[in-house]
Length: 111
Length: 117
Image (cartoon, rainbow over all chains, first blue to last red; front, side, top):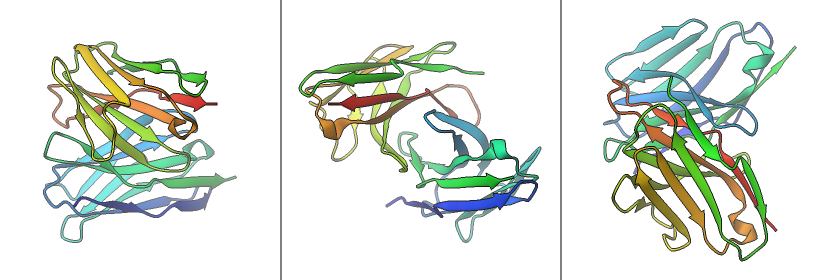
């Protein structure tokens, strides 16, 4: 079945780069997403990558996709305290368009 | 951008009562909406897929008689938690698919915190 795995916690210092990793199992996924959730709030789409791409950059965010290993990563450059949140990766299931979420990685940015 | 709202943002109710949560797409029509449940420090678990004009599709293990979903219009889906109990306390989040976008993005509502006493 489908499964998406993430590490649960990451702590970095302000100004450093953060790398959040994710593995997935459904090789037929067409889109992979990164969402950000702040406390008590819904999910905000940060970025997405199409499965035939291996990299996408959007300002401070860089997404790397290794389709062979089914590994997705999100790199946040110059991490700020405002980046502290939970980050979810998700794959889109081709049947019915369901999103399958990872457990979420709690990013803590220390000044 | 596309906006999805939820109402109420939080609700406290007594055990045994029913609670209705609304999910609206404010500036687009959504033929498909999704309902998720999130426990503290955990991921989002899909409960059901709500299709306008037809019955919702429930995920395995979700009781359809307890979590009633109605998607009567292209901009509104409702989730009713019937005879709520403390174990139903959770954060409920809806999302809506905006048709026509290349990347098939789901837009998420801000969530509804349900506390059952």
